[in-house]
Image (cartoon, rainbow, N blue to C red):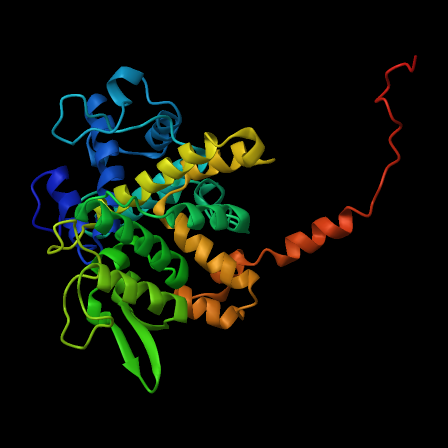
Length: 368
């Protein structure tokens, strides 16, 4: 007895996605997982109401090894391209857990809507272990030496012969990374930001943001962010600071008029990480120093959300109190913010290093 206006599984999923319309990033992520499931069900001649505990197991195994590869795996292509594939490769354990978390939410909603008779996830005895994506510490961030190198690379002087378009691209990339590092925004918050979101009250500058779950917040703007904002506006031939009537997008396309979308901003940041990784990997050995190749690999893996993780982690390392970190990150729970605190792990390493073992020189080789 369906309680939603749908006549097919696809329409039912569309109804579910409308619940998240206020968050485009969430809709994209949820649509991707639902589409993968529907394609797999179609290949197996199944419908949503036929998914049971056993078939969930089969689907989880499929996520770890989508076969045949030529049918499921391929490089990024537009959705309409004949060579588009739903996977870039087998999903890691963390990505499989995230997929199951999203699909559990889908089936819970479909069950409440009367579209399916039950939620098969409720029959998993080990559901908590399978779908627990919580981490004790945040790992996906740039350590201080890596960030320092990247910021210097982003600030390389412009060539005097560069065009106006290249000049604006340089300023925009630099501003995006500075904004991400100093205020820890999510990518959708960056793309949707307006100039007049920066306001001056009682002698201080604040950034007003509508974040996850449509929650409003006001974040202190540090002096360096204000400097970057002034330089970015001047590069766009605007006054140094915005006023309350300036509703222009904070980040613009290179035509200088229209704003960037979430996807465009994502690609811009990923491209910068890839270029930086390549530049670091090609440094002369004498300049690179130890760890350069590992840093280059990390940069190649980095995604836009790493900027947010880096910002919060470095604020914690600089001594910002946990309660203020949580307010900047806009976390509801302090234990979420506490994952960014690495000082205890560093002290643990230091103390364990005092536990020594005498190892003879030569490593067991017979001395001549």
